[in-house]
Image 1 (cartoon, protein in one colour):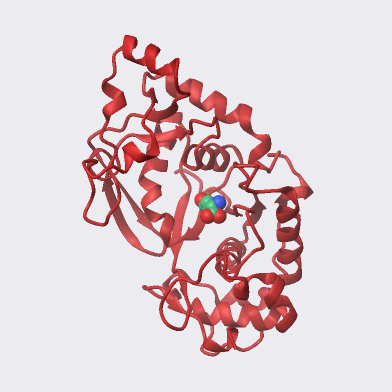
Image 2 (cartoon, protein in one colour):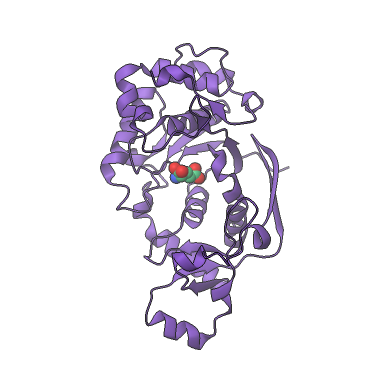
Amino acid sequence: MEEKRRTVGRFAPSPSGRMHLGNVFCALLAWLAARSEGGSVLLRQEDLDPERCPRRYADLLEADLSWLGLDWDEGGSRGGPHGPYYQSERTPLYEEACRRLEGLGLLYPCFCSRAELHAAEAPHLSDGRVLYSGRCRRLTQEERRSLAARRRPAVRLMVPDEEISLVDLACGPYRENLARECGDFLVRRSDGVFAYQLAVVVDDALMGVTQVVRGRDLLDSTPRQLYLYRLLGYEPPAFGHIPLLLDPAGSRPSKRGAALDLGALRERFSPQELLGVLACAGGLLDRPQPVAARELIPLFAWEKLPRGDVRLPAFLWE
Ligand code: GLU
């Protein structure tokens, strides 16, 4: 019988600003999911786009996690056996993965501009997402050469007309047909920055992550990532996509809204008070009473997470 792998959870924020309450919720639940199984926790800074993610935000994020009492065993500035833990320093690993996909004959250059991708005639899905038309897949070598003289291309991965499914720890069964609901997707942007989809798979696989906990807005990325796991020959982790946090009116708080970033929140609340609010949002406490992160470990269970998105209490804004 195959032995169950020891749980390695992770928190993989994009440090493009001060941490906000949604990031803290994700960090808390990823930490609790791993710790409640006696697992370890890894911190990876997803600063793929170095212009948007200066190192000072990554440093502040570490300080905020420590203030909250959410510790990690490897990663970030602490280092460890699977480093570096900053995506901006892992480019050679993404290049290597691209070479392997290239070797499978599945990559092609894409010259489409943003305007062309979102043009009215581009195929749209019922939820408003745009399906890539496959236009550049069909270019001849001659056309590729002449376009490449004028524009640096992005790189796309061909997807099969096949349903990819998973059973999510929080959301249950989920499936997507990549060709019909997503289309060939980017592994590298035209400015040379590797795409999140590729980097996250390479990193989680090489870092030995066995459990990915993140916001439900990324659930529909998971079939693409499972496809990459298969092509690159890696064993995929378990996935748990957690509810999103809403303001009291039911809208998603803006990422740029300063009110819920930790700079402002740390002036008004203790770590225990904030964790109490989030534990309540996650269904682990009945009331938002102050609590330490460690006290929540025995209370964590996937079944307790609310099915839908969660409204935060109004006093956070008062
Ligand atoms: N870096 C992504 C974000 O902050 C999360 C990626 C992931 O957890 O897979 O939205």
